[in-house]
Amino acid sequence: MKVLVVGANGRVGSHLVDKLVENGHFVYAGTRRDNLTSSSNNVRYVHIDLLASPEAIAENMYDAEAIFFVAGSKGKDLLKIDLNGAVKVMRAAEHKKIKRFIMLSSVFALNQDKWNQSFLKDLTNYNIAKHFADHWLINNTKLDYTILQPGVLKEEPGSGKIDVNIDYPGENSIENVVDTLVQSLQDPNTIEKVITMSDGKTPISDALRNL
Image 1 (cartoon, rainbow, N blue to C red):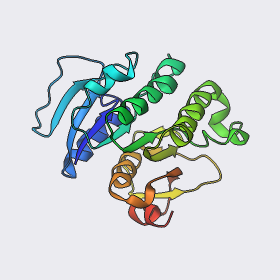
Image 2 (cartoon, rainbow, N blue to C red):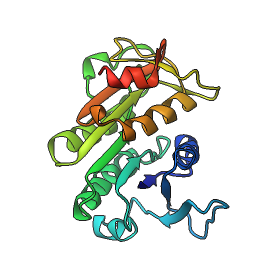
Image 3 (cartoon, rainbow, N blue to C red):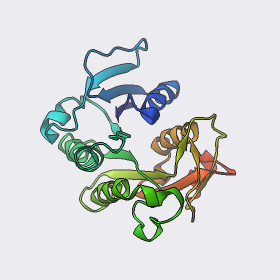
């Protein structure tokens, strides 16, 4: 499948591009940086500027069949990037008639009652941005969405095992998050699902199959 990764140079995006290629996909690696190249014949860098119009963004989606939105501003421009940038990509996807849309969000972004738990109490503005981006995807588009909501990300090897529909925010290896994103693309059971997750005890494929 031909897929677009928006935020391809980020902590998650760079690993996601590699994992998608490993699984046989062709990746349009979307980034605002120009003149990037890849040694892989299955990766093409494309210019995606989240400050541009949805129409301009759509022009660089080419013939992608699915979109991953994993971009973020690292807290520097939450409204323009994390919220409205996501909405612009959704609008661009609908303009291009690309139905499959997988978005990386934040644990309990849609459940404000949990925003005082653990590390979330220090991320209120981030959670607000993610809340309304998730809400837009669910209620204002007709996209075949999956929203993945992990807790804090950590740089360590993945176990290949997760817990889903969790009650309390937990840690997530980036590798487990990436594997879950990729397997979500391949599993139609994840369509129209919001998946809270943490590292856990269930193989990823089983966890997604039993949502």
